[in-house]
Image (cartoon, rainbow, N blue to C red; front, top):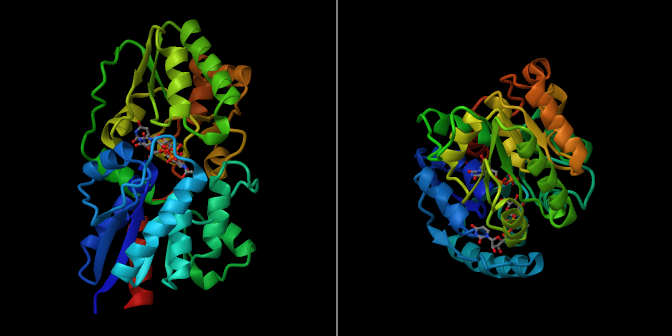
Length: 366
Ligand code: UD1
Ligand code: UDP
């Protein structure tokens, strides 16, 4: 008998990383794949679902402007209880470390439905950093039946925490599946770029960077652009109002800085491909850019993705202005330093993660 698998997506990165899993389940006659959009993000989620041609079966439309963590979690749990009661799936999947994932894992546990965690085992070891994602991951792991770890390193973290080896599966990261899907379509940025200038691509959105750290990061970026006339910077501005306010105020009038709305995934992949250098506090970008041979300076104090740092293709530069500026300037000035980082090396998988996830579900459910 076909098994019903409910796949939950809430924010942009979850949709990108769940899209290959959803498409694989939809194409498989053994499974009835149902897609639940919590819509913790509205515009940024819809952008991704459109690129991958996914229509949610259920949409909770939960996002509120300036939502709080407690308010969002509470509203999600109440709505999820209704959905799980009506849908009665055989298994539930969610990806990553957002509030949507925490609430989905908890609601699944309360309803005694086995939960599969895609991208399991990422840890910084600091519960407050990234905030609140490290807590979300740690708690979700406690509630998980299938731990789909993207790397051996992540799987080992789970084993060290005592999770049974039979429940921990190394799959690769589904973001590489998504990247292959989009990269094959000859993506275009749709931006008015100056081909004579080197492109620095920037994304910013982490909660722990709001306020002072974000201002320091902006100072470093402004100096970089001012001191390098052959550089243009593209910054697609995340919808979070804590980011929008500061970034618009800081860069609104600067020459050679393109502030734009969040790019759809196809355009963003094109922008990564067109870039010389990426500065980002994003999780997903740390995984994608190395697969495209683009160096990433990670604008954070800590990362749960040490594989790329160890491979030398990303670098943790923190949130203080001068170290950020100096690290970027070195890569712009020193071809040897640049070449050492700009290696096409992907510690995060081979693009077949979703197939491995589906095979595990088939083996255990059918
Ligand atoms: C969320 C996740 C974070 C993830 C990030 C990916 C939590 C707590 N945070 O952070 O882990 O890395 O998404 O981008 O789960 N907004 C819109 N339209 C959108 C999206 C957001 O207007 O399409 C605005 C709304 O005012 C919303 C606010 O941004 O209230 C914050 O959204 P939220 O999902 O709570 O936090 P993010 O910072 O986006
Ligand atoms: N991304 C996108 N458009 C943008 C910026 C980022 O499609 O304008 C993609 C990016 O390729 C990556 C994901 O969004 O796959 C990262 O999302 P985000 O930084 O919001 O969240 P995180 O990965 O930090 O959780």
